[in-house]
Length: 389
Image (cartoon, rainbow, N blue to C red; front, side):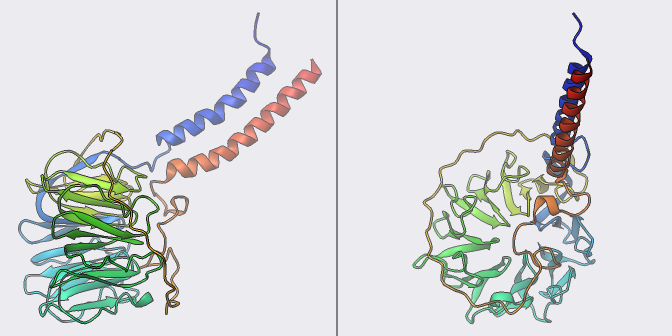
């Protein structure tokens, strides 16, 4: 007995939107990033992941960048450098003579460093930059919302510029933070000494002198709950953090939209957490990146992608540091979350730029609506055919 025509038509009306949504999830409509590990052919001494671009310091002292370049943030100048730092839409490099040069977006002056000499620099994930000067004091330039570019006095060994807050390690090992503090990201624990600090979006992590990690601030994605163990370096970004263990392996935690917290195996010397991706420097000097790759930010020069196993990472988390927020002053500047040089919240995936890797989600939204329409039309058509039989 043959299936009635109206039944077949109804099944077809149900099947079409389902297939479209599955195709969207699998990335058949383009724009879906390569989640696998991307390993470079060049060798580096340092790598720095920004928002959607990455810069690396090659063994010959030159800087090479890759990824998004609409503001020139991935077009470094020539010369010999000792450090590079990739920010939101700008980058900065520390030259051999101690001077700093920056390139990319400069709407707030974040790419216009002062004519001083420095020992370390940090391009913010917002619209400012900071550096430790040769006399161990800190200088910041660019946007100064919430006072993030107004450093305290004293001597420091390292600085890290986040979005709307900045933290630095004093020469006595204490950490001082300034800027936005609603979630406690600028209130480091007292009585603790550190060797390094890393400012993220609304949280901060520090490497204690005993090589353990301690984080504070917002904890929406376990941002301030690092794994137990001992480490040599930590890097905090928008909503995830990565660190190098003392045995050279990597540990990452926080938001995992694109596999940014699932690092590859092997031994590493350095790691840098970007917006929704991460990069690390292997002990052989090659750079490896993983996570979102819509602009090629996770594809180092000469890289070849390899699959990443989607295993669930398990780790013993440290106790959460609770914080009671204190009122802060109204910022002196108002910034559009999607404007150049500043980002108040991680960008909504559905509001990404053309070509962004959010295609699966955008497609699901669009084709979900189309599916409802097709189902309605199919049901009406089937009902009409049933009545005419």
